[in-house]
Amino acid sequence: MGNNLDALTTIFTEFYYWVTVVFMFLIHVGFCVYEVAASRRRNHAHTLMKNIMVIPLVTVTFFFFGWWIYFSFPNGPYIYQGMGIDYEAASFARPWDPSMGTNLGDHITGVFWAAFLLFSWTAASIVSGAVMERIRSGGFWVLAVVIGSFAWIIDASWGWHWDGWMVKMLGYHDAYASGVIHAIAGGFALGVLLVLGPRLGKFRDDGTPRDIPPHNPWLVTLGLFLIYTGFWGFYAACNVPIIAPEVIDGEITGVTWTATNIYLAPTTLSAITFNFLMSLSGGLMAAYLVSKGDPFWTFSGGLAGIICASAGNDLYHPIQSMFIGAFGAWAAFKLHYWVERKFKIDDAVGAVAVHGYAGFIGLVICGFMLWGQPSSPYAGYAAINPLGMFIGAIIMFGVLGFLPGWIVAKILHAFGMLRIPRKVELEGLDFESSEAYDNAVAEIIAAEQALVQTK
Amino acid sequence: MSTNGMTSWAVDLADIGAVYPFQGTEFVLFILGLVFWIGWHILQFRTEKTEVDHEMHSDESGESAKDIIGRY
Image (cartoon, rainbow over all chains, first blue to last red; front, side):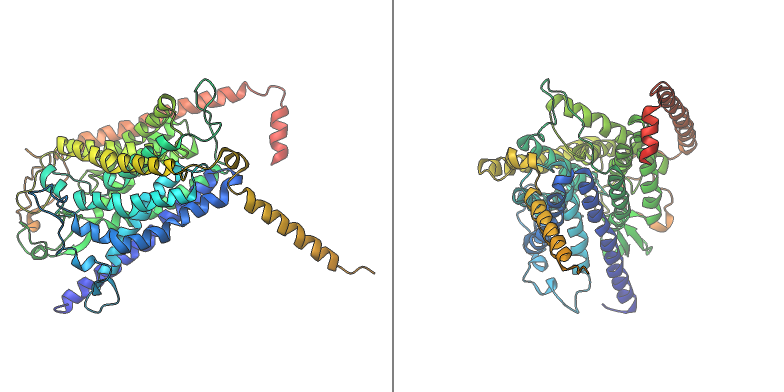
């Protein structure tokens, strides 16, 4: 910290990210509530534990190598001008570097690391809901580390980094992560689901799908409400809150300080507040109509609305954002049921549609809406364009999402580590612990009753 | 060509105002937004009417209604 203004800016930025992390915790709370509520009673404990253990497993692996990947891989390696892994830029992110610990010379790394880490949890948690009630917890946790500490952070390094090759070469723009979190997680979930297969009883003998209603629809909507709340923190965490033009070191002239997106291009908290709420509203309104007032799909549609508009929500007009949100929600609903009928995919919570399809579509729309605008404040970067955004969407959903999910699921399946046996699925994942619980309850009741003295 | 007129950030931010795309269409967007909002109400009324009409023709004996009331 060179002077008092630098010190205040650093401490403000440190506190800003810290607050976003606390808000983003609610995303995981929401996912846990929502997923348990969507599962059936005989699977509650395993469903909850499957998702909660994402927190420690992704956290430690993100500390060990995920954070380092982000700063090492912006050039591919070897995709942009033959440049390899950037060891020098990433040296401070090595888990043994002094920056990765209590250090009075570095006030930012820990909170910045945590902001990215919370995105990692989200990516893994999105997959968790889709595969519930038939996946082995151990298999899922391997998949969670692959998406949370490896696949998503590579995509962030490529397309959500001021120096990422996708930004430089494709003009990729994804300010609030339509692709880098949602499309990749949706694609990953789809890859896993193809190998995992549907829950028993999901499809009739003629191949038509049965509805498997959540055991508690109201708790599902509460979970989604919590996810909305955490999403506010997510949006704020995607911005740099305040920065001087000379620090950006790009082409911006003058002395006006600004907030920026992750690419260090100017935006405002005002813009993203308008657009978050308008895209949420467009999504809710469209989803209400298309689902005929179904609470689960109306709430999910609100989320799909935000996700679809997120790529360009730093720059859209609020009414544009509302229409994009409405289209995203409508498309997610229609595509979910079409894919379910056509390909017999059992996505238990609609995660592939709400995150994957809405995110993919949002990227494509962004390419047209922001066509020709600069993707970066630095010179020589490709402008935002439809083809670059379409290729980016394929990379996010297909190359870094679907493929790793499918490949790792295939490997787990080959070793019998992916799906629980039919008997266990039917009696419920919690069968043994429920039996132990019932026995403990019966024993303590009998013991206490025996202690009651009678005259 | 750029949908917000900017092709580079080589500018002084003090001189920059709105940066959303397709500036000049705000009033048209506003009208379209109004149409979306009013249209939503019309479609919602129709959907709700269909639902209520359907419920009016179901459970003519009243047994299901008694059961639901009993469950509180």
